[in-house]
Image (tube, rainbow, N blue to C red; front, side, top):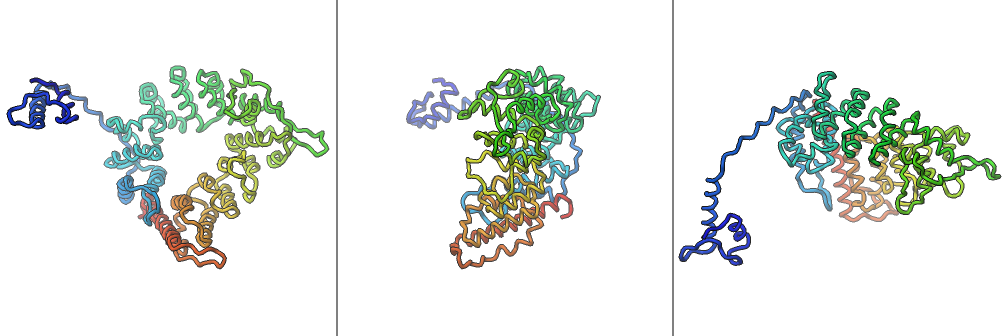
Length: 533
């Protein structure tokens, strides 16, 4: 009885008790033994029938990376961080040892800040770590450099490195006139082209724009969107003609991005058009006896000109059309027009004006988005208001303090959040902490530590502060470690505070010990990267 290889495999998978063996059995031979014998014979036959194939071409040599090597202590630290990445994750109570997996992103960013290259022997582990954690990819591939991309082409599991924004920012820019840059742009993988455009944009914004324009009409819509986004860096009035042409793109997303970029240029024609439309909808009424107030007349329609300039005609579910169109017009108009429009001298005065007929949420929300888009610190400051103002209940506010804070200078941002924490505590401040520069400035770090210590002394439930404690481990200035030793002592029980349970008290002590240990480790890693350890 003859049988095919597939029949043998099927029988083995189903089992000889469920399927008749498709081979001849010798007297007294068990079915399973007969199946294995037949499989062995068939294996030899299959191998004997194989024909040699042409050898695959040997891959070209890995490109050179001229960046300096890591100091030896830092190289050992990277190997340790990569080896620890697969360790057991958090869940429930955290251990007292620093979490190396949470320190890896910060270490990579610091190493890239020094301009180092990854050791060749650690490139596979680095690529594997970035495959498992997408948040590591930009910094990991920047450290890996051109050799990481070369290696990624040889392993399908690392193909993420050849897509989208994953390309390393350290990609070298070919010298002008040598043709290498144009060849890379015409023939390179998408990730290489994105990296090339971004690197060229940093060095020569006009050359990057011209390179993009040379193939713009032939690019796919999703690629045009990604390439257009690279113009954010170094955006200037010189980019306006190209972006005006993109307003007529066949892709709605490309048109919207082009309009957004143009609206950040106060002198652009689009900004002027939006300003004219917004002025026609928002004015100051001085005729009422109660004093001047802002009056709003939302646009009655969304015409073709508005759509070309990036206004989306169809509102999201639950939003009225006219308020939706108004918000987009005000958001794209230069904020500088409003002081003149209202006859006031500052953003704070404009924000303080009453708004008639319930239009304040829409108007202030649009101003907030404009302040973030245009990076206007004065308007962001006015819309934020004092940090001591009680925060609105979740879901009821039309303002987003975290986004508005991003438009303030780092020091002012940290001081505002520090004051907010001192007044309102940590429960309302978690998102605000995420937009503050790392390491936290001294007032902010002190405010966070004081709030944690107050929560411990008040008998607060410790596990509810684990997220803030984790942020503190990564964001506090490492130089503060020695000043926090007193926090590891058992808290004094306040007469009016509930006595914390033994488990809670132990957790607080362990958490502060962990915080100090992590800060000291971060200080050591910083010294290793600087070559002073």
